[in-house]
Length: 506
Image 1: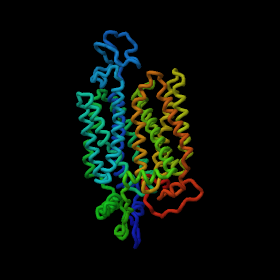
Image 2 (image 1 turned 60 degrees about the horizontal axis):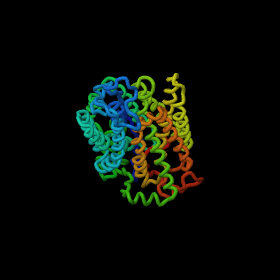
Image 3 (image 1 turned 180 degrees about the vertical axis):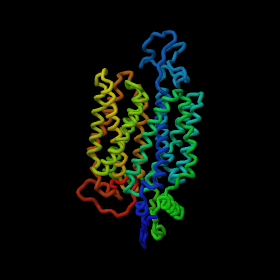
Image 4 (image 1 turned 90 degrees about the vertical axis):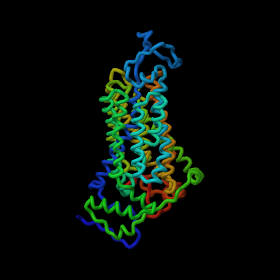
């Protein structure tokens, strides 16, 4: 075994110890695999309605030759019996002819449930632990998703959709755990590799939907395996950082020692005996609002971040949802919109390490706006060109979504950073709530959804002018330091302060 020593007679920050672990050795590779599978399930769950409740053509039995069966102004067109092209589909089973809003409501309810879940699962993770929250949400997702596949009542299906999204999504606690088991300077690359699970899950959704076109069996195929998340109770370690903040130092040290053993390194006992981690005070929501919004500068940043988050979720999910309506094979098109996240993730990681934030974010917003707004005007006889531009727009949305995650964390002071990020993320999910309704716009013009996505990205890009450019600046601890970001000089901060989220340097 190779020896790595951390010698110190004073308190040793957890980050110093974690920095001794290689992220490509056995322990962290195993954790990457577990995180990969968890993130893959999130991608499957968040897009399930695209295929489970997919659009199906129908016509009135009394008028089989009619081309238009329902109009935008009259959704209650009388017909004694409707005939569906896919008799075993979700739309046919629940008899949703001329009630397109009920079909798209499935996606909206899922996004609304996920937004509510961010406010529920976060406190659960802080109170019970990251590992416990991962196991609970993973198993509940399997329960609610499988129950939904047996639904015989539309509104029961909707209720299960909401509950699964709210307290049955493993992503949030797994995301936090993934960031907390590595040192700050290694977080960016480590999370990038783990996040490939999102892409895998999206491609898997298209593949499973192709193999199981029946909506009930499709749901069972993607949710039943999630019962295996119960075994994360034995496969997953709790976050040492969370344990330290709860005063459970012995458990944290034991996990670090086991990890060192798996990685074949030795951590100096003296450093483990003196191990410490900053314990942050619990900031009440009312105190958060008071401390943050009393600053005019931080108020402005909050609203800009809210625009970023709303646009990112709206466009990203909207492009995925509408991809199945493009020319060509819907399964291939959906898989391609997911696969573009791979180069986007790698490129964004490189950009965030080597460049500042403002210009890359603005350029990706503006490029995405141009691509989305121009796509509807491309020649219809060149489907390859239309698909290429559409995918390029999706690529840009992946860019600015990833940058938004990090930029938001860097704009606020330490004691409100995590809370403000959660607040922006939660309220910004309004975009993903609205996104499933965008297919309804095609009644007025087939290219309208894409054009609206472009307008949203344009507004978000313009709003970026209102925030400072940062990257080399130290993360602020106080409101005063946060207000000084981007200026020639900012107040110094203590070295070694633990920061939530990604670190901009490796």
